[in-house]
Amino acid sequence: MQDTACGDWKAEALKMGDVYANSFLNLSASYATGEDENPSIFSPESWNHVLPSELVLENDKELRSNVFIDADLWKDEVGESPLMERGWVFQERFLAPRVLHFGMRQLAWECNGGGALEMFPTGLPPRFEDNYKKDICWPMMRPMNTLSSEEFCSCWHEIVTAYSACHLTFNTDKLIAFAGIAKIIQSAGSDEYIAGTWKTTIIADLAWWVYKANGRLPSGHQATHRAPSWSWLSLDRQICFYPYPSAHHRQEYFCRVMKTPAREAAGASVLSANGILELQGLVLPVDSLEWHNMEVESFKIGNFQSDYCGGPESTNLDYDGSKADVVSLVSQQQLFMLPLYATGRLIVGILVSNLYTYPAWRRVGAVSIQYQNNAPELHASAPDGWKRIGDSRWELHIDGCKLYHNISTAFQGGKVTGIKLV
Image (cartoon, rainbow, N blue to C red; front, side):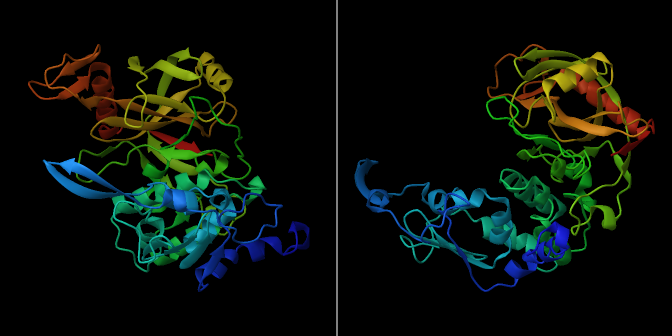
């Protein structure tokens, strides 16, 4: 392929997804460790030390033979092999119907029906296999997929989390190295792809947060020239998602989508996405932040106190940029929460500001507030700020429940604001 100046790059790069999707077999030097290396495709190490081991144990006064297997075998050979860390390879593995991996110790087979190793040529043992292609890729790609909205959303969030952890030599490739995946999923159903989100699940797709290793924001930067601030594609960091509201449990939405960007601006065939996402919702001030190193320990939303708990299903305030950015916004009273939805435990929203972008808004982070919890012990006393519901294990966070009630009442009462996210 020629470079961008010759005009061939975009046209040819967009065809890469079709090349792998229509291939018969993809050969993957999965244990190659560097882009500039030219290693032999396969120099296997001995796997004697990871062979299944038989051990006889006493169980219910009987001696029984047990076979122990290294549970990390598939990760070592495929899932966490060096090649799988590359962004372009993510698309190759996802789209190719069959992949033969040349791993650290042995050959590995992966297809839409499952996986196998030389050690287990007829298939991997139960509870052992990483069924990535079988359970994630194939259900999303098959024509007229029958996934429910909840299943589709869950699979998509797993895909995004995995891709966002990969590395690209050129960060400008972020969209186009993912384009083949978006195109084939879009062609399999009736949904519309919009800058890393889907039209029917866009509210849940907005509920992403930046993974922080050991509480610290990893290196990387926001590239708003590449994608709008509300899209995870604008960041060069690993992305995670808050729990999706389940149809089998309490779910309530606090935001309406009024208009999405055109396909020409934010579809699957663009090198950079742009466009305004128009919403209707509530804008609540966020202030009184207290810090412990790089973590927000407590904060107030609408005069209701929330304390950091840690974990994906608890109270968290996650910021996209630097601590200094957040401190500056709070000091200028320019940090707000836009509630998205509530699950049976959480209120989930994004942090927004219109400083420098007025009258439009930009995303600057995400927030979750736990208002209900299932206590680990039935007769334990409720923590400070919580109260127990009767004789059950359920506990309610006093301020969290008040905030939930106020948000729900205001939204149902039509006290909403038009918000244009850029």
